[in-house]
Length: 512
View 1 (cartoon, rainbow, N blue to C red):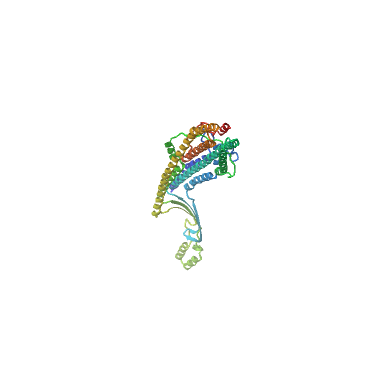
View 2 (view 1 turned 120 degrees about the horizontal axis):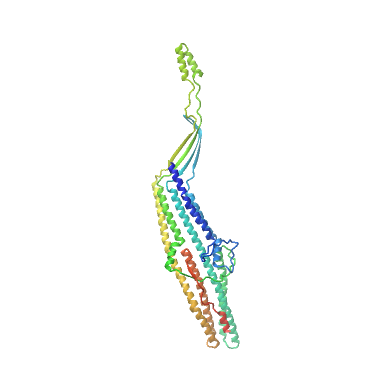
């Protein structure tokens, strides 16, 4: 019995380091909610509070991520689910509560040593060897799975912030580019009207300029109206009011990946939090299978009982003090023999002795166990645990296939954005600028029409917008890859390169 107690206590004690490790991970990850900048080796954990952190025109993407990590309620909910799972471990690794029983005998039970008045007992159940340890291991794996879900929630939040941030950046740049082109078309329309008055230009040139002007005004209004929904989307991730204003981002980092596609896929298989959560689910199912096997063995219960025993009633007096004995002796009172007989009778009727253990309370130690005879039930529990493991294994394989496909698509979109950036920066935009210059020269000499000049300006506008779109898309797909892999991928930061402005102001000056 002492061996059983010692073994059970040791089982409970061995879970303390495991719980301490989980608590340490939980406390350490509190810093993740305040966002650790991983782009710079010297950056410290930002401990800014909501009151201290402000988003203004000088705020960077890292500032937005820090704000979201501090304020997003969904991330807070994921963190608390992980915290709740950690607190499950000490619950399943502790012994069952001792059981105290009390009995009061309404009608006392008479025994040889006296009446039983009341009784009390204390018992403790000890699960079979290894049950508590397996329950703790299964709960710890469940807590680790919740931790990975928290990491996945954090990555999803950061992706949403980055995606909306880059979209907001593109919107600001698109409004700026279209407005520049709008200013140029307004000037060209005034030039066309002035030349029409002097018969240097035809009336259709004026109409074409006005039509183009109307189209650009509509495009600017559409882009301006789009600002509200994008701000609301960004504010939702930041846990701000939808109407709260945010300034346009002034610039974005120009980054490229430094790893091959195969290396990125390998990192995804190792670090993706969804896959790691499923790995912990598989481990949890393994422990649950072993635990189901333990159900075939009984649990032991050790008890200590106490019974309150009262004193027995004293027998009536005997010997010569007994009147019945005296009367018997008087009948035999004649002669010495009769006196001896009377003395013998008196001795036989002396005060009776009590039992040596009369009135003493009773202490009793008990040992009991359940009898696991319904083996079909335990076999079904084991089959259930095995089915859960197979399900988790299948989920893991399917999810890895889906993630691999998503990584391939993200890499394609990233490479495509990179190709378009190079195309517009190095080829199309410079060619469009040359086309405007040559068309402007021909227009001034009368060899090109006003429509050709407007078409050249429209081409430069389209290329400039497409270039800004490709820049934003590259940042968005890089953010998607970070989320899919489960970490910020190594990347190189570089200058944008050639001047990619549309040069609309310089063109205006030339036409003038």
